[in-house]
Amino acid sequence: GAQREALKARIRGLLARENAVLVAHYYVDAELQELADETGGCVADSLEMARFGRDNPAHTLVVAGVRFMGETAKILSPGKRVLMPDLEATCSLDLGCPAEAFAAFCDAHPDRSVVVYANTSAAVKARADWTVTSSIGLDIVAHLHARGEKILWAPDRHLGAYIQRQTGADMLLWQGSCLVHDEFKGIELELLRGQYPQAKVLVHPESPMAVVAQADVVGSTTQLIEAAQKLDASHFIVATDQGILHKLRLRAPGKTFIAAPTAGNSATCKSCAHCPWMAMNSLANLADALERGRGEILLDPALGARAKVPIDRMLDFAA
Ligand code: 13P
Ligand code: SF4
View 1: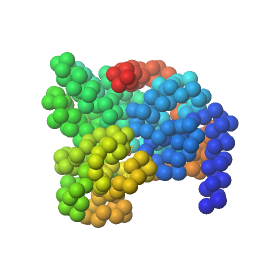
View 2: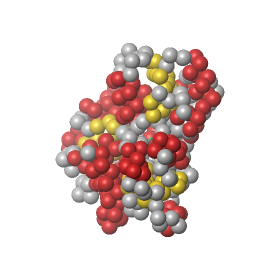
View 3: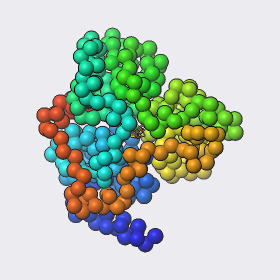
């Protein structure tokens, strides 16, 4: 109501006062996405968030997403202040790949090129040859495979296995997964497709193989949105975080989007996927971060410089 409108007005004022820009992911609340769009920020997938933050002249980047996105922004722009509404917003892939254990894994396989998903800590990236996101991982691994390189991949085993099947590359996989996408089940999706036989299926590659196998399109959040706009279909089943539904409905009005169920065969959103860490971003803690300079990402500059190498490689490859 009126209180939320006042809070949004306060945030607009604080963004201007602090020379700050809002960099948001599609999985955060619709209200935060709208604010980012309205105020000259961006709503994007993780690759585009990294690029936008790097290229935007604002002095402060406010990253509404999860910790690795804030860290990546800071690594790419050590001279900017990077704030997050909640620094505790992590990611199960990041949590499942601690830096020391990962370093030992790398040490045991020195003959392999180390490719890590963006959903990792700065310390893990610092050990990598390449960083990739879901939008470009397949192209980068195909490129390395064509050069005859063997890959050590971390941390998402589903994305890794998908890329391995698509490229035929020799990949040794860390066994991590996203607790949100891991909940999509092939059998439930099959039942839902039975109810909507004409629907196209959009799947994020962090989903298990049985789900990816039923996809019409596999891609990053941005790639899934673009596919929904382009494809000639009226109904889409969407296997990724329900936060994406907001943008899908805006960009493809008149089309129907159905969240893939995570349990049972219910097509209602009672059982659909939502990342608990993305959900920690709110209008209230965003305003507070800006007001008090709270939630700043601080990184050891030497670590940041080392972690920047594989991220720059990815961004140069994508350019
Ligand atoms: P995207 O790069 O596709 O936005 O994915 C990030 C993410 O965390 C998906 O769960
Ligand atoms: Fe991490 Fe999964 Fe949340 Fe994405 S949805 S931030 S991969 S836990």
